[in-house]
Image (cartoon, rainbow, N blue to C red):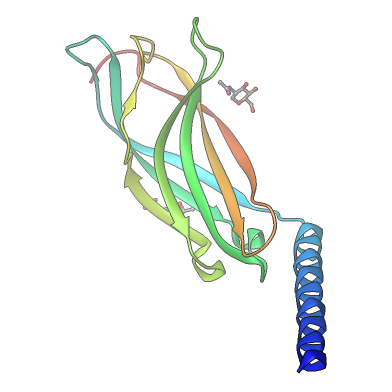
Length: 167
Ligand SMILES: *[C@@H]1O[C@H](CO)[C@@H](O)[C@H](O)[C@H]1NC(C)=O
Ligand SMILES: *[C@@H]1O[C@H](CO)[C@@H](O)[C@H](O)[C@H]1NC(C)=O
């Protein structure tokens, strides 16, 4: 009995060691993959642009978000969380970031897409700073691996601007 338990213990230790080693190799080989994602966002339409009763500017816009994020996927990728943020500068803050839209990409086959969508989340400024405002649209992603560390990156697209007047 004693020697059986001893051997079982040894076997388990061995198995756990192999497993740990495989995880290390998995995340290492994952890091060797150099992704080359691409994205493009067109603003199709400004649905409306107003000053709210409380005085903050709010805009609703329709976008065509297209991206090819297939290279973010390896066999070690569980899923990829993406969000599109409007980023702009005001006198008070050098970076204002408003999340407009998000999605979870569950598989590589779904990572090349285009979608037409209005902003899912409200594009509201803390003040009256949006008229004529130039802004960036940034596609951020968080890659969630099966094992190892999560990593995040982004593509910044610039050259967008809001109308000078409320509509
Ligand atoms: C959205 O953008 C993609 C890529 O630029 C394009 O292929 C597609 O036709 C566009 N869709 C619309 C409705 O404009
Ligand atoms: C917008 O993008 C440009 C070019 O990448 C960058 O120089 C600028 O700092 C960005 N603006 C903000 C507010 O992040």
